[in-house]
Amino acid sequence: MRVFFAAPAAMWDRWAPALRAACPEMELCRDGDPASFDAVIYAPGYPAAGREMDFSPFTRARLVQSLWAGVERIVGNPTLTQPLCRMVDPGLAQGMAEWCLGWTMRFHLGMDRYPQDGIWRNSVVPPLACARKVTILGMGELGRAVAAMLRGVGFDVTGWSASGKPVPGVRVLGAAALPEALARAEVLISLLPDTPQTRGLLDARRLALLPRGAVLLNPGRGTVLDDDALLAELNSNRLGHAVLDVFRIEPLPPAHPFWRHQRVTVTPHIAAETRPASAAPVAAENLRRAMDGRPLLHLVDPARGY
Image 1 (tube, helix red, strand yellow):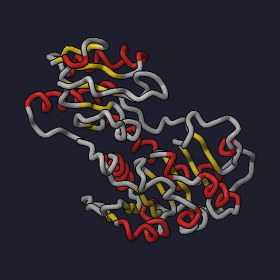
Image 2 (cartoon, one colour):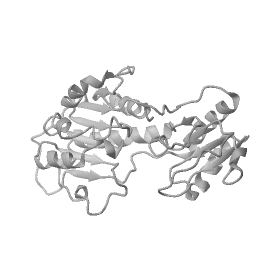
Image 3 (cartoon, helix red, strand yellow):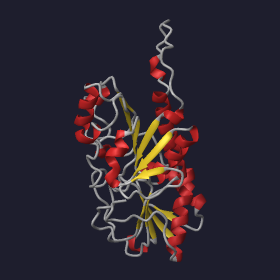
């Protein structure tokens, strides 16, 4: 099979060896007649920043396999008529779960409560994890991975999704129960995708439903959060802290108030990374399925946006 690698040039050296090792029957190319390719492997930033790829010449392609978990930068492309599959990388899910566990533990244990200044502070003892309520917004692959890791430590985890689709071992609330999901969240983790339905979901009204002193972790999508509303909640001392890994504009501009706020921690979109070694076999499996006419894995529904 012939596969076109539609990704920024800087990705070639890392991805090409892993993809070829996972799918040796594939001829992976960076140029050639678009009509000669059986599939496209895609990552945002191709053909250049700010430009959309034209998929219409790829008349033979049976699959467009994204290397990113999020597909908001491609799903609305009007030239995309081929089946689109998002990347569900077990390495990315593991990395996301570890990031969420680490930051949850930091605030659960009050690790910032003990400056090394010679003062003996033993008046506050943290509860056990089973007494700490965590809510996860978004119960897709990443949400389920995070829930499993936090539950493994003992946290009281509730999930929320628009569908309310059951997840074994986790209480999952549906769309109408969002106020309940927020009101219980001592730690709120947002793993929601970027869709018309989720943009601005965490606005002033909904942030006000969080318990006093709650902590917000957002490694999902920056568009879910109303930045001004979050700053207002932090400034009023209602919210305890926010750890933000994703933003409406990236890189986050140096003058943005998040950088200077004492109750905000900025991490530079590193909560989870698609790793070629673990992601290439996923792409290879979908390429084989496309060639054989079998159902594709992680097929995107354009109407839903993910």
